Image (cartoon, rainbow, N blue to C red):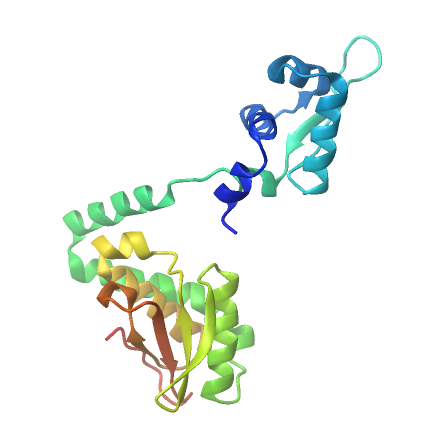
Length: 222
């Protein structure tokens, strides 16, 4: 489930509580939350207990109060991830800047190099695959972990990795060269040539990739 959907399901009071913590990384006391949310001390503690059980908040460093230190609560990394970030807009601006100043060939080379470097970092497990089918299964697992909603499918007698949720889809619609990154990443991660056999940019319902034998050293974005 998308993080933004999880946030919406939490209810107005818990959403406001989490946003209050987001704006106060140093932590917020129960008393502060009572004033901010307009609810009772017991109600705040119930909300805090529920959000803590979900892993979205945690106790922070206690704050001095002239008497007994007051407990503070902070967002966890999981709590911060509930709030959407418009990475695509920033990435699109960066790509367009590079196109304007360096040209398409340079952008393609940069994306290929970046994909290859990141793929090499993920290759320890995938490169040990005994055959293309095992490499395909391991690649699908890797892509799924990265958010691609990937699985393996049989196509024309070959096992292929199929991804339903390209993480770059909105950016790739404007700049198809983004696919150079995916292909280079998969090739470096598996240590095998990768052929894209279907693409959502071309009207298919998913992107599919076929992994070749380990003897070849090149990959293709065709």
